[in-house]
Length: 307
Ligand SMILES: [Zn+2]
Image (tube, rainbow, N blue to C red; front, side, top):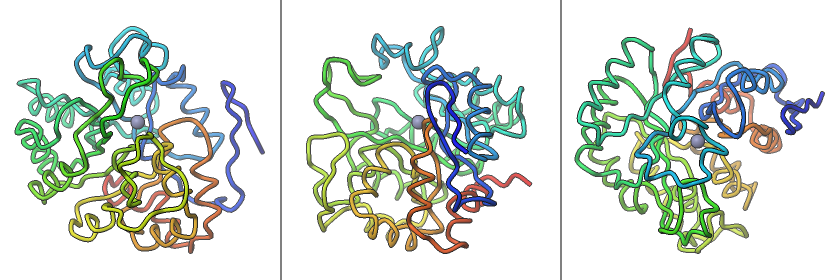
């Protein structure tokens, strides 16, 4: 049965009835959705839990207008809101926090958050910072020691259309660096699990990653750099959330099915928004039962055991 919440109509695909679902990429204080709105939305889709991610960084990295879709009184999507959400619904949310590694006390604060709030994930990392920066690498290694997987947002430099993008503005829009940087930090932190996310990551499913659009469409081109990197680094995983993954995988659904079969132990269902498009896409691929179990919750439970 379809439900409309805050103007978004959602329906759990019939083919996914009975599956345990964990959304590994979610937020509150996001597009006008409060903590309670988020839970109502999850209930309508049968999502048991969501990893609740922050987006914190220096105020100068958020442009005017960001407050319309992010926190209206603080900066970005702050950890305070994650803490509040977990207080209200400890059985529905898994707390995450990507502390800015440029804060001198960042690692100490993260350790304290693990001890006091029960933080289980470092994410969402989304900073105008090369992710092989030395402070960043120290943070990644600490995450490895603490058993926290890292969700990183990667976005290549694109011309910014007049502040249309949250966090953009007149400067080119980028986060984390180009794709080369992924190889460097993944290689330097073999004991840390990294989960790749966003347009700068998923565009490399195809060989035409140099196209100057945020979400390239059309047939896949051979020579994508993502698969060779996944072959080389078992600590690199994939976040299926957001238009970035969905658009890239939708370019060739038969290829998407093969990709998920091949990477079935390292892909995580997530949405990053309030719609049902990712669930319907996964349902449409006719994946074997055991693979769907892994993608919808099993892999998330291996990284962050709950029971
Ligand atoms: Zn996100």
